[in-house]
Length: 320
Image (tube, rainbow, N blue to C red):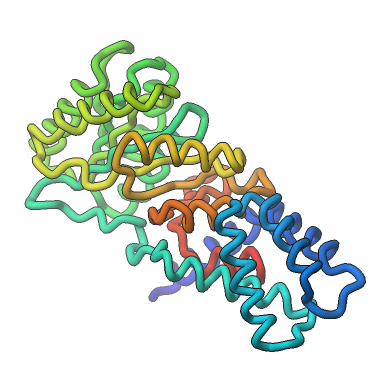
């Protein structure tokens, strides 16, 4: 790794540490209160710790798993000092995330390699306001910087602001954007984008979709139509369906994940806005509960603040 790679990695770690500051401070202050006046980890401490994790938006099911793991260690060790609790928590959460295979091997997130000579296609879904358009723009910028030819399809045709915002990001990123007028058929935009991208030998296509809160049937029908139309151009498209969630909404992010995974085949997650909240524990819970890889996390406004999720670095920043 050259000097620029080392600098980038160091900068990413600093951005991650800063972005998770509020969550870290919140969790540590709660743990301090949970063990106040206690010298060893007993049932009362574990009950308090359970409340800490749930109120940190780790989620009930995942919290129960973590507590059960710590209970087992307490039973085996007979005596466990409360000063060890942070380290034990870090170990058990790391272990849990490792079992769920939420890591990724590519520096760019996905491999973004062409499939059968065709562009790699990512369909991006999520409700309005979660940072979906911004996430697409940041991914596009990182890809073009890495030498990829990127096309963006503005298939969220229900909001003029979404198309305009995406166009600004495309220009900033040096990507090619395909759009139609507001109110156009989203599937038609996706079709045109893939057709143009394939004809011009693009490497990657990012398709934005409408962020309305539909009922599940309406959402399924719309996304299925977009998928079917894209497959007329590239038979195995999309290669990834990425759901963008706003980490600052805590339990609402869980609910959105449930709705979208029920409505379509989500293959990956991006969790945004972790820097402005103390609810970063949501990453742990969503990773565990849905068994879908978290590929990106957003820890700030800058392009480099959208980071490829590394479970080990995340836990280190949270509990280090």
